[in-house]
Length: 493
Image (cartoon, rainbow, N blue to C red; front, side):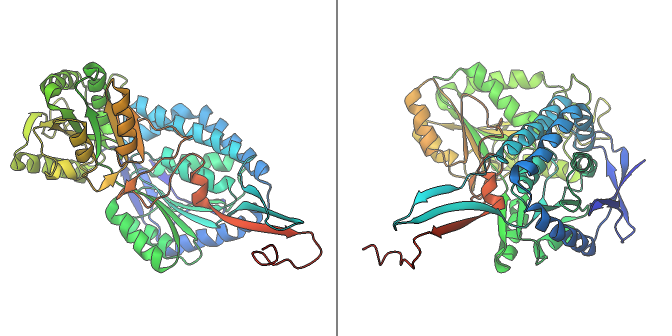
């Protein structure tokens, strides 16, 4: 049985609590191994290590810092299949998707390594003679990272890589459901030659370890991906402590299908977006806003494609849909299906926990389709985080825009149409951080900002150059070589 411990100041050490928790496979409940259960004292030791390491790291030229990230990228690439296998065993997504997620981490490592030779600031003309003006990026200090189980290495890479190339140190709490992959990622940082103390891994619960990260006075920012409930608490407490936060939370994403759309293409996009990762994506399609004239035709195409979906162990290359993460998630999804029925939505497919074909030991839920859903129903408003999609009929694009924007979230949206004028209206009027055209609601690439509006986040972005804004402060620098004191806004007017 594998047993994993914390990584603090370059050493693999168990928590002083002496406790270990089991890590299980959501396919069959098999115990994969154990992981140390940490305390606030473990977080403090990690912070002290990070504090000392960050002082030295900030003085290392950014291109030299980037050399380590290049090595991380090559090691990730070399171990792609190994990491993907661990990912599928821990959280259940099918192996093709697991490989794709590891590829995201590879892409992010190469991309952020390139930022080591950029990290652009600005030079601007001064309003005074013989004076130079510029701005530069400087590291924030110590970044506390709290990452989820559904994309355990991709999101960890979105946060840790820009933090490091910008000159910060990291204290990382991964999700309790995916500790082994986190440890493997940190082993790669270690092998790549990252100086000790710059990445510290502390396993444990959100209530203990996550709270300790938020409360610790020497952690300068908290980057969190997870639920709105927890994110709101983090933001409130961090605000009291005058601590920076970057939050990426829920989504209630919609695919809009207009009557001139390619319905086969739209059906493919809906099925992939709704049931990939068993619907456990913050960008998953959980609503289909469809023009009334093509609603029934689109439903039939989606239902036909759903019939071909195979459920099972994600390590089987022929499987399309794996389990959801745990029994609690399974019960939550089923409760939402009951709510949908009670609200008057029509269930066209699915709606049951899977117990046949040897899947009863795992956490499997049938891909589920509701139709005739009203936008104000709970299943049309609340994030279910499972393989459930709702069809909402509308008369025209105006109504589709209204329905798309009616939820409290604003992460991802999509439109299928052949009309370029309607495309540009959707690009302008959909109130989401990401808009897809003639594609589903998933498929973000690492060189563009990732995040959303409204209840999805607090304005920051993971991935892309925008992620550097989370992990850097701006410093304005003025160099006066006139040999005299010049008073801006006074002496020149």
